[in-house]
Image (cartoon, rainbow, N blue to C red; front, side, top):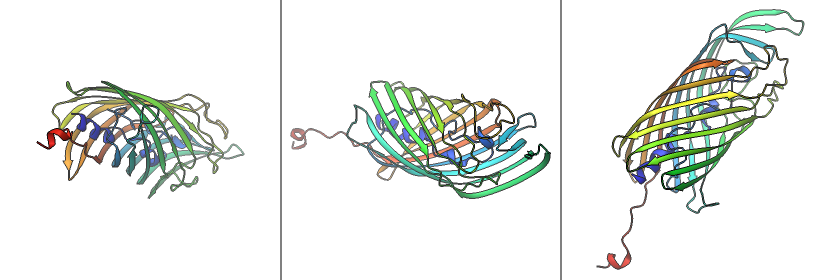
Length: 333
């Protein structure tokens, strides 16, 4: 079970890479937050096999906001949002064999390509206070931002602890005059901690990861999102060495106000919760180990942001765990 738990790790938490799908469908400015709830999940803090691994993630979401949920985008108030986003996130992770501060260090760099479609009923407010209603539609397919990440993971028996730091390098397709974007238009940094209880003999697992996001000012709009707080949860049971099932959940809340533009709808602190099922499959792939994870969330309790549902399909390929070698004295016999 030890090698299998390491394999499933890389697919069980997909760090801040899918964040770049952001169109006008999430929190903060234009309904967009750097952190995408659900990025972490089961086995998030369990150490992985040293070496180079590769993760590919498909992410699909359909968020909506009715006319009672206004969203601010600079000088625009928008309501009645309908959106659809499809994104593919991909990139390498290198896990070091040499410990650092008693932990296992790893570095990652992910990118993405995606398509965003959005339609809204908007109300434009001119500098003279004139209110102009309009209906807008936009779609875009392009490359998104880059997302570096560093992690440290400690293990002691069934207890595992994670520290991570990640951020947004805003090089993706972004235009402040467009409704649908792939990049977010500004930098951000996010850091937090996580814990995983994992008993490989019984197959029981529970994980919780929490962190905070600091958003830098968007130079195109002079708008700065507030500080965000988020919690991701995952619980699973291994039915065999190859299959596990469980549940996932998240909670996202903006804990400080946006700034930089007239606060036409107040402080604009957003929140959302989500929950759903997950299933994972583990299998050999050549000389490597692979893990396929499928999970989904239904959102609820949204404030100042749309809510809907989202689907994640992640495939991770990592080095196979070396088999224990017999002592040299036995090998010669």
